[in-house]
Length: 342
Image 1 (cartoon, rainbow, N blue to C red):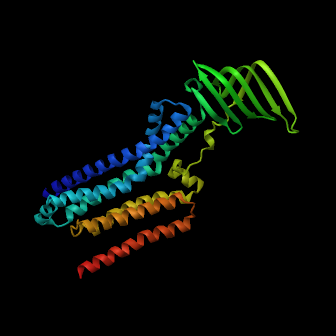
Image 2 (cartoon, one colour):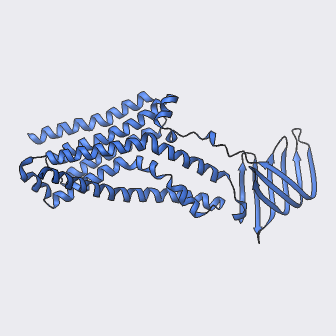
């Protein structure tokens, strides 16, 4: 009964500090992503509420990246506080040794691994795919009614638009586009709107210059001119991002490198827990030097892993590098523990 109460108390404390660090890290990471997304709002004048709603789809993917870091700081801060309040000494004085500490850490780690695996292998990729599609659509669908000006806006790869807007009227409209010819269109005024995946231009008082393949120039002056240009940017099927691949997608496409990334993420969580137990918890060592050593080893390993994942690397080289960033710290830990025994 005593052991059960101690385990529950320790589990609650770990969860409390883990949640606190999660909130801090997630808030900072989310705000940085929102700030980046606001560049879309400033550029194409998308509603702030649309940007905030879009940013919510980033949260699961952010959590998969920061979870190992949260675990490091959450465990360390929790047990530093317990040690400072002499609660760890009180637990050991009951006479049941490290069993409640070890069991609680094991149970919490197992819970984190299960939730992280579900998130990392399936949920986060699915939600991130929705985010990528929505972001792509927002970047390439322009609401001209909410735009007061355009600074040579690329509507697609072959079309550039520039205009000014006064009192809801479009003026000084400049349009450069390519079909079988190179075309430049200028109009003093007009109307611009998107409809049925087309950009529609109703132009007044201007001219059109066309240059064919033989460099022959044709100029047309007009009072009224109607032009439609297809918005061929919207093609969600072309979006390819490894972060949108679930475990089933990786297996289907034989993307073993991406699959290995996900398994290594889980292994690093196990590595952090094992390192924390043997380096800090087994001898209740929470002095500044030992804490800095633990942070340096674990955070360094996680950062190196992220660098490798973002680099163009082949599977064999990645496995070799991961082996060294895990094997070397473990050897150092074994040497450190043997030295402290003597």
